[in-house]
Length: 151
Image (cartoon, rainbow, N blue to C red; front, side, top):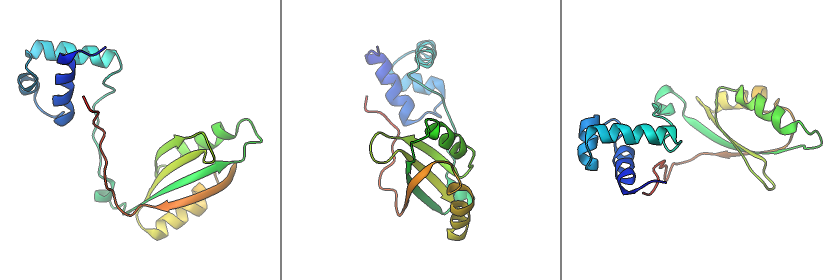
């Protein structure tokens, strides 16, 4: 379990992961060697899952995001696996979530414009296997997006 030192380190790391380790250690109130040891232990323990570059997709010309709520025809026991395998193969699908309830799967899809989305929808998304129902929700604005965890 995490102690107060680990939480201090994580608060500083979440706030500015690009900060040099010596400065990060100072902000967290630990030595650089303690910081390195604690971060390594948190990586090994699965608390930290990695450091990644986040690309702002509109900067690359993708101006549309659509959330698709998909209900599957579940008479075939392989329906979920086959649908998910197909969805993973669509590069414009940026996120796949599964649910319990009336909606089985939510896909986040990006497209350059409406024409690109329409082609993508007809040629790649509607051809995915086992779809019983699909509902599109056009993304209008991002009100909050925060991956930090309260520590």
